[in-house]
Amino acid sequence: MKTLSLKLDDKIFDETEEIISQLKLARNRYINEAVNMYNLFNKRKLLKKQLARESKLTGKDAMDVLYEFESLIDEH
Image 1 (cartoon, rainbow, N blue to C red):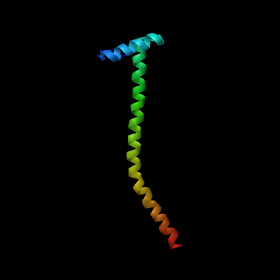
Image 2: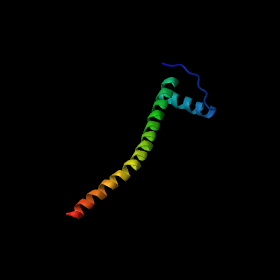
Image 3: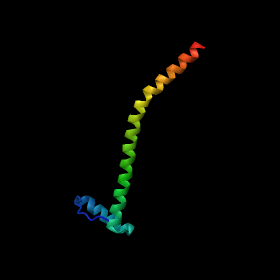
Image 4: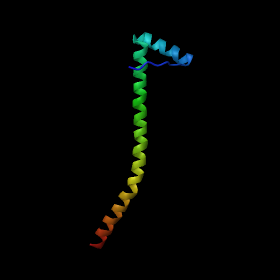
């Protein structure tokens, strides 16, 4: 595990303290889980962006292939 220093806004800290006391979780565990969830969220967001970009790139190629197939069908 890595040790780090973290500065939180007072409001965020107070809300966190209230929640972890109700959940009976250690602050460290709560923050680890929160960062993990945020990492998963951002990974999905980045993947969505990458897939959209790659889809645009392959879209033109797919249309070119479609036109070629249509021209072959028209010839017969």
